[in-house]
Amino acid sequence: NRVYISTTTQTSGIELFAYNITNNTLYLVEDINTGASSSTPYYLEAVGSTLYFRAEGSSATGNELWAYNTTNSTSWLVADINPGTGDGYPSYILPIGTSIVFVADDGTNGKELWTYETTNDSYWRVSDINPSGNGLNQLRSKDSAILGTRLMFWADDDGATGNELWAYETTNAT
Image (cartoon, rainbow, N blue to C red; front, side):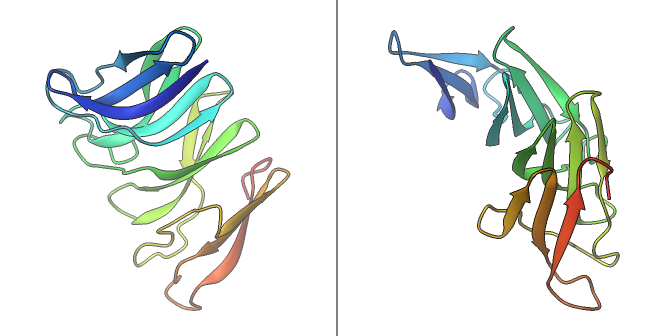
């Protein structure tokens, strides 16, 4: 009975809000980047009772992967992909089973495919598709398909063979 959105107020900046459709109320879910500074939640994707999204927690963490549990109303930093003040810019979040896959930049390998496993709270870079730059700029429904536990996607130029179809099997991380 709730819809989650990113919107703004003068006191909290751009933050995660919820709209309750039963009583027509809009409320601030969490002021992730406290005060008038904005966390700017983006790429919201629900997996069970948890909402995953990109947000800027503070100048100490940059734009990283965050989560909000709709059952107990808690939010937390899931993964600091580009540690410290760097921005991992997780984007194109897609759920597959108990995992989510997304594109992120660790500050060293460029934009690549990452996985977060919700059952054990672990995350990792799947592959360095292009060792000399960005291997994956987008992961969209029109450019990818989920077949059971396998993600099929088009990867950007790997530096040698150009754009090609790739597959990632989530059950054995290959």
